[in-house]
Image (cartoon, rainbow, N blue to C red):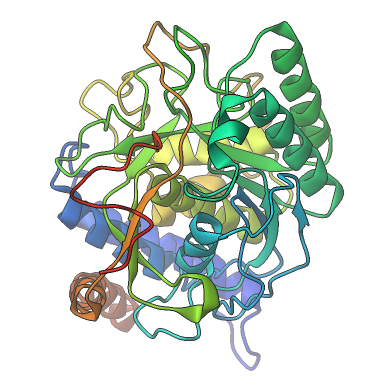
Amino acid sequence: MLTGHRMSRRSRRLIGLALASLVLAAAGAPRPAHADTDDLQVRLMAETLLAQDITKGHGVTVAVLSTGVDPHTRTRSGTLRPGTDLVGLPHPKRLEGTLIASFLGGSRLSSDLPGLAPAVDILPVRVAPDDGEHGADDWWGGSRVCDALARGIRYAADHGADVELVSAACWGYDYEQKQMETALDQARSRNVVVVAPNEPVGDGDWPPLPAAVPGVIGVGTLAKDGTRWSKFSAKSSVTLVSAPGARTPGVGPGGRPGWTFWGVPPAVTWVAATAALVRSEFPHLSPAQVAQAMAVSAHHPKNGYNADIGFGVVNPLQALVAAKKIEARPAPLTAPGVPDSAHFGRPGTIGAVRHDPALLAGLGGLILVSAGALVATVVRLRGGRRTGEAAASYPWTSAT
């Protein structure tokens, strides 16, 4: 018992982790990975909000390797750092990257976007163009994709990133593979956690880079029914954990609310945010230990692991509990494995549209209801003690 003094921030957090473990144990076994995605999103946000009672990501810089972030973006409490443009095409839209930033760090312009890790600083690194930009088709059709991704990984590592969120994938031959491995070695030497999609790429059985390189946290994307979304996620052992890619609210460039986006970017953002929360609370964990904490704490499928969804659905709250337990343990020798046979298609961006504000408010309400139920349990315990295809139904660059 602590008397006569205020508990330290670290003590309060450790107690919070112990309570979190009790809460989820009392709630029963994790739900199966094929649970309804709408319910899954609500549960994930509830778990994230509880994790934020422990840490909101203070002291962590997340590099967003995407299509660029609008310089006027204002997250909840973190800062938007100066970044770089490795694409070189004029008049960037910066749509995908801005939506990712608003989901990751929240938005001061929308009370319904609390942010998955609202205190992180964001380092924008433009490594790809948005669909519809002048010259984008030629850019994607060239050999610059892997080069831009590798340079982006190196740039982020050199400029203080703790976590790198990579929203695109590429494929290549020996040169591209070596180039990517060299960039990731540099990131690993600086203790940077790299999160990337297990996204279909290429015209054959090509492993998606950088996710297929050992040491990277490969992310699977879940469809609305909670199963692997084959359009955005390959079936292979590259996937460590998965997250929903369902429609997700965001604030676009110029501070314009009313966007939704889906596919790889929201799924990767869920996982990168969890990594950022773990790294904020346990800054001395190696990237392999962060990956281990997320793998052992995921909502596991029946057999513990499968090539569709990896170790299961990411669990932000329990990842912190697991990280505390392995804080003093040695890191595992390897991370996610080598890809199994799969069919890959061209890397793409996201689907996104402007949406009715009622959708945003409705999701916020569902989040609050679910979070309220879990928070009430904590209170009682404390009281007792992208493919690039434009589908006709959602032209992602158009407004409604």
